[in-house]
Structure formats: C-alpha cells, structure tokens
Image 1 (tube, rainbow, N blue to C red):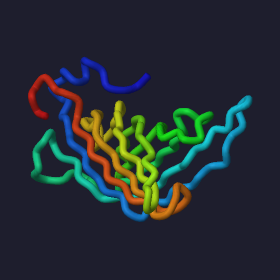
Image 2: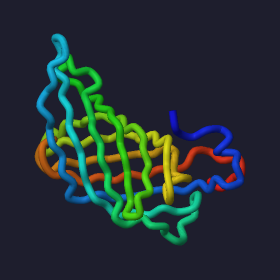
Image 3: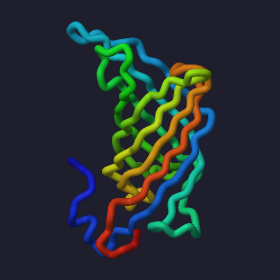
Image 4: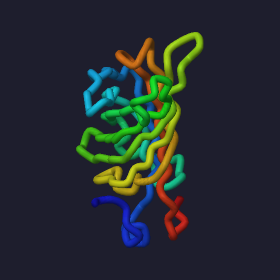
Length: 170
C-alpha cells in the first residue's frame, strides 16, 4: 500500500507542508441505498472546488499552488442498521490544477441541527500525496455545512498539518 513511510519522513528531500482550504458551493448527492444482505447502506457523494494554501511546515508566508483545489469524497454511515447513526466515514481525494493529489480518509459525526441543516464535524488522515502535496500527508480537522439536507449544496473547511518530522520543520 502506498503512503507515508518512516524512511520518507526521515529523508532530507521530504518537505512537510500545511494545507488549508475552503470549499464553497459544493454539490452533494445522496446515493440510493445499496442492499447488502439484510442491510441498507446509505451514502453521500461530495464534489467541490476550493481555494486554499499549501505552505512549508507551519510557515505562514508564500502560498504554493493552493487555488483550484478539487475535493471528491464518498461517505457511508458507520452503522447502517441504526437509523440514528451519526458516524460517517469514507475516502477523500484532493487534486489541484497541476494534477498534484492527496488521498486519505475522512471520519466525522453528522450533527443534526435542531433549527437548520445538518453539518459534519470530523477529521482527515491523509497518507499519500504527490506533486505540491507530496509533503502534506498528515492529520487535520474538517467541517462541512449543508444548505438544506445531505442532497444538495454544501460549504466546507479543511486544514491539514503534516505528520511529525525529525527535522523539526513542522
């Protein structure tokens, strides 16, 4: 399996980067429940364009190709047998304009709003990056706010800090 290795983290060529991005006007689509023996598997598919920044370590100077980031995710209920399930998880992929990519897993809690649309609060663990995102594997928070329900528009914020690096760059 591709991903971060201890050797890569110790390599002098490894340059950790922090990634932050906002997505506005994304589109989500509730997928029809898939029937697996005696279980209905609900799922939601997310797609959005965003602008953000990719910075060396914790450095707040100089963005690197952070505009035009696209995100794709497919989230499924953690416990499809529970109608009150709030846990959702699935793969997430970020791609920028020059083809750099970052893949990982998104895990979150779907918070039903008492007086409004649902939101998902969670975290991302990214394990494989290429190009501008080669040093971005790490962990971070994600927040998704839907406009009405899971089928339609959403806005999201995502921030990743790189895994610890022995060179102290993060």
